[in-house]
Length: 306
Image 1: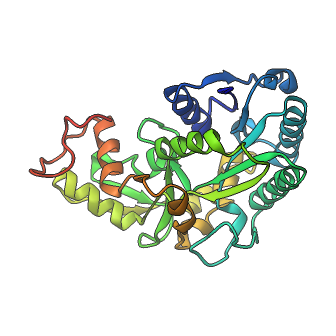
Image 2 (image 1 turned 90 degrees about the vertical axis):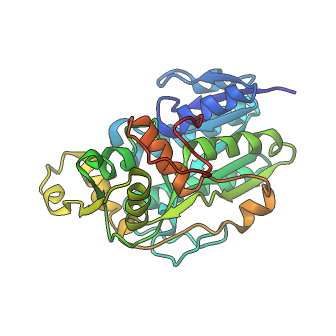
């Protein structure tokens, strides 16, 4: 059976993780080069993984619909199925735990753009095409310096403190990319055998900044303080700094406790072991070269393979 996948946005967080996971599973991975003919690039592909976003968060309003139009045209032309990494922005302030049937009530510009994008993929699936929306919380990965966890929350870890982006006790959903990309591969193996939509929420790991600090303290053997992110300073940033605007727009998610219901995921993948918080912390410390206090009889040590 054809095991060729075209990945859009391979330089990004999900795209690079997906490329590694598909290659490890024996797939032939092709990289889409922005600006080239996507329909030509997709010919012969079994799947198109659309992890492409506008560069530097620029002009989401026009670029996301344009990318979606290209992907749908390329899928029609090539007969490829489509997999899209989804996020939780579409739920807005709907109470969690969130599931595939939770209403999309986006409360931000970015959330509305994503909801409209997903609706187009749903319509495409209704036409008889295979589409997967694999949804997760904030992306995390020990080897990705550009994640919020690495770039902001753990920035001052060597000084004995972390940064809480919102309320320290607000528990939030996080998606470890090595886990989530493995799920993407497993879905790609079977989800194109019948047309239609698979909307699957990946529960990931749920934790608060307080729980993160406690686990860091346990593994490092010293107290870890929590400071609050300086949103006031960010609000003074130039309105032309688009990253600042994007962060401010999604601020509500850092204060609102939320989680993803894992029932649908466990029913489909009962054997899949999602990383625990202690494992996530260990990997981030290991990649920083920070000494972990030995835990005799524990499941991890500094000799543990990543």
